Length: 301
Image (cartoon, rainbow, N blue to C red; front, top):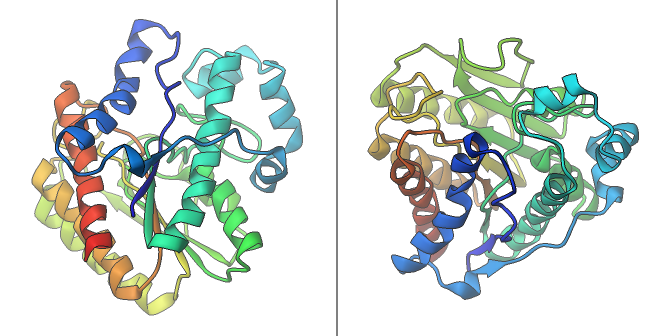
């Protein structure tokens, strides 16, 4: 059974310019149920993550500053959100959702978080709408709980997973792969184990060719015991921030390639959402739902 982490505190008391991109977290579950892809039994609501796990990926001083709402104006500005207790609570819940997804992926083969992919969060700071790095925290969880020796992070959000790359730069058990816009945010890139920078305006056929080449390269380098997939849909040609020319159909082919890779390797996979900023909410929701459809096919297959 596909298990999907979802909690209903995604629509926060935010200014209008922040509220629109948050709508997808409410609409995606509704659309998946409407289309019969999943039912209510597929969803679970996580509890807040324990600081025991957060401090594996984050400095305790940073965690305490967040909980005390003591970030400086400059630090708050870099996160992109006004700092509130509700926002911090949301980050605790999102992060635990990804930890829970590790357990469900190991049990069922795949799982997903309707949120997460907060890959711009460093150990000591938040950036780019990311406060805690859920994939990094969940990776440490998997390493400790399941005694894993090899984890693969496939980050296909259009923005480089700079926080994730930084956190794992000296940890050989986690292989970080990021395929992202070369000239897009963040403008100061970190070094992943494998970085594939993309030119502005790249089209779907070239994008998929580079992804296939990268997955083949990774296959020859490591044998992961768990895969995290950051499935951002900001690669779409309709995206306001992406600067690429990938169609929704090719974005779905991307998802199929990643899940087929996991299936062929017989490796459990956790998918987290990442970004998506198209002008029309329909484009965002449909592209994200395609990821869940591809994952459902993996489990049913």
